[in-house]
Amino acid sequence: MILALLLAAAPPQTAVEAERAFVRAAQAEGQWTAFRRFAAEDAVMFAPQPVNPRQFLKDRKDPPAALMWWPADSFVSCDGGFAINTGPWMRPAGEAFGYFTTVWRREPDGGWQWTVDGGDGLAAPRPAGDAPKVRRASCAGSPATVAAVRYRDGETGEGQSADRTLAWRWHVAPDGARSFDAWLWDGRAMRPVRADRIAAP
Image 1 (cartoon, one colour):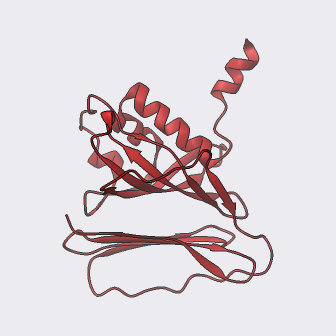
Image 2: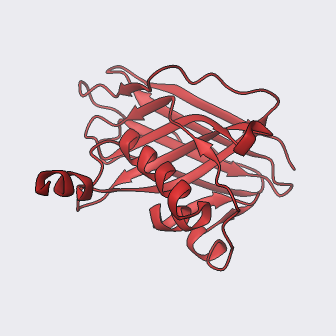
């Protein structure tokens, strides 16, 4: 019994486990309550312009029923300090579908917090598979910093794991159209693993 309580209190060991804990919290505590609780202080979400979720959701009431979502793919830095999860989401009763992409950061206490969260709706459900596919970056070689991209307008954010094996960049145009790109080191080069393109609302 004591062991079960200790295991229940232990922080998630992987970003996939963190995503699942996030989903469970959304179902049990409320969607926006969970979003605030799992968000890092410096987190960004899109509404459609970038906002800090702790501030943006501060007084927002939870919807009567939370979204359901599950990780289908997880891209993890070699050092395990960052991961990017992506997969499908669904509104209750299946009246709407979409996908999410979330950047997770491992904190000094061993727990995880998300730092970037985005996604879009889809006309039909996206397949998820039976279990998440986890791809870890190679620990071989010397990864370089991903080259910066200059945008003419809008807002941009980017990040890279401390070991430079996982990198990401987002951009939001003034009309709300946005992009999210991610790269994973394969031992020889940074290979694209995500290229989300979201139209203006």
